[in-house]
Amino acid sequence: LRPLARRRAHLRRPAAQRLPRLRDRRALGPWLLERLLGHAARAALNRFVDDYGAGAVVAARLSPAISTDAVSFTAGAVRLGFVRFILATALGTLPLTVLIAWLGADIDRLEGGLLWGSALTLLGFAAYVLWDRRRRRLTRHEDC
Image (cartoon, rainbow, N blue to C red; front, top):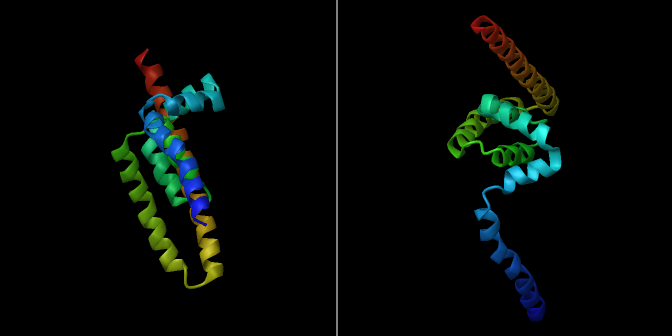
């Protein structure tokens, strides 16, 4: 068992030595998104996060249907600020925790409540984004 543990440590060491170098590459997130999504989609995602980033994190945290890993990765890759991200995560997670505690006495009630909560949260956020975009378009036309 001892030699096996030594081999594992030997294999982990090179990866651990590379982590600081990867962390120091400030362009790793945008570069990876560029490779995964393409330039146009990444630019659209950056604009969306600039406009609605914290709100999107809150809506995603309120909705258990959305992967928290995907939200965290995307927020980090497009450089959503750490404080904004943490505050939005807390703001979205706290109501979800209270909802789970309140609905958790009955599994059927919990399932239905989480589905309805997710749907209402995502629809509400989508309605807000659509309203905001329409409002911005109208104010741009009035300025011309």
